[in-house]
Length: 245
Image (cartoon, rainbow, N blue to C red; front, side):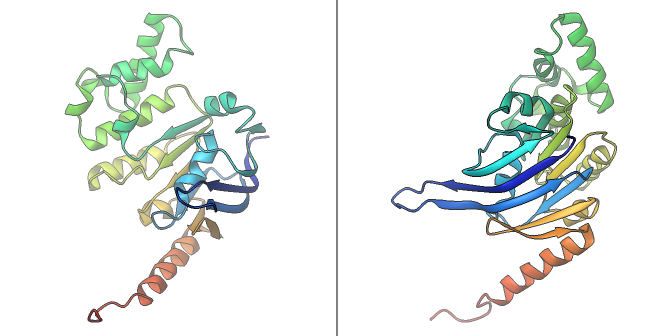
């Protein structure tokens, strides 16, 4: 079963000082077989919650999420072996002093022999054009190099699905384009949330999330147009230009 499915999934969290939990995602049912899927919406709309359900970082309060037939709650270890997750800020997931060490750490479980692991790490770093900075401190790298390094460390173990949570947020134009080309060339299924609507237009399918609900699901161009219309409506409702009372 090479697909991802949500069956009536909801996510609720407790709120301090309130007896009523806050709902982050409402009764969501989806089947996601496409190779490239974009998720767009305003900050706080529920995009990250949706993505984090895919590898068990968030568990559903109701319903089920299946990744290639595996339940993200009862089979979370198997799910995480198949789903690689790249966060917005690469420094939140790069834990070793250098890129080489970080990629080798990712490979430690799958490759026990240290020489084989080092050779595989070099091959991964070379694939992403990072071999020449492999032994530099991660704090000496550019934002684009860090993001590519985080991507390389995740892809080193060859997951079936790659989840990217707003990966271009911290990138300049050149590094954003590098990320775009890199993602386009990957074999993995890619599910990506983004505020970059040009990146969203590269997708085979786009989901628009608003207030914890999927309010559009379909063609990328139509999805971006729908989101633009939502934003325009929200701006029209603001009392812009009015003097404070």
